[in-house]
Length: 325
Ligand SMILES: [Zn+2]
Image (cartoon, protein in one colour):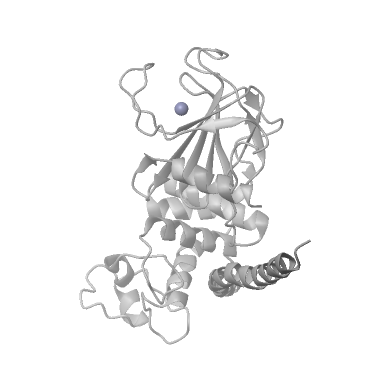
C-alpha cells in the first residue's frame, strides 16, 4: 500500500473530524442559546401568571412565523398594535402603566420599572399572559382568550397545535425534518409545480408527485399535529399535518393509514402515517385510476390567509439530509 496515500487519508480524516463538527455545532449553538433565553422568559412569565409556558411559546412562535426574518435585538416576536398597547385615545403613546391603564391599554409592566414598553421582551410577554389570565389558565380558557385576541379560527388552531408539540417534547428547539418516502425504496419525482391536470376542471397542480409502489410507507416530514384525515374526491385517502412554522403538509392518494393514527395526534419527522396508493378521483374507495404515487403539498399561513407553495425544493433538501444521516 502507498504510504503517502495513507498519510493523506489520515490527514484528511483528522481535518474533517476536527473541523466539520465545529462548523455544524457553531450554527446550532447560536440558535440554541436564543432558545434557552426565550425559554427562561416563558418560564419566568409562567411563574408569575400561571399561564403554562408552552402557550406563551406557541403564541410567540406563531407570530414569528407570520413575520419576515429581520435582524432584531428582541427575542420575543409577539407584536401588539400600538393602538391596542397604549389604549385608544392615548395618542401621545405615554408608556407609564398608570397612563396606559387610564386608557385601558393592553400594555403591562413585566420587569418592574413601572413602564409598559412595547419593545421590552418581558413587558410584551407579561402583557399577553396577563390578558389570557383574565380568562383563566386551563386549555379551554386559553383557547377562548386566543379567540378573543385573534378572532380567527386557524390562528387559534395553529397556536394550540404548536403548544401541544412544545409541551409533548418539552422544548422549543425542534428543527429536524425527514423525506416522506424511506430512501431504500424505489421512488422518483420531478418538479411538477403548476402543471395543468385533466381531472376536475381547470386546476393547476399544487404539489409534488412522488411515484413509488403500492404499500411503500409514507412518513411525516415534520413535527406537527394531525389536523385532517379522511376521504376526498380528488385526494382519495389523505392526511393533513400542521407544523410549528404555520405550514400545513398534505399527503394524498394513500392506500391507507398507519394503524391508530387520529386527528389531534402529535407526530415527529419519520413517523409513518400511511402508505403509497392510487386512491381518489371518485367516490370513497376508488383506486387505480392512475399510477400509485404520493401527492405531497405544502401550504403557508400568515395569520390572515393561506396559500400553497412549491414543496419541491424542500423535498430535495430533506432527501439530501436523510441521505447524509
Ligand atoms: Zn399530485
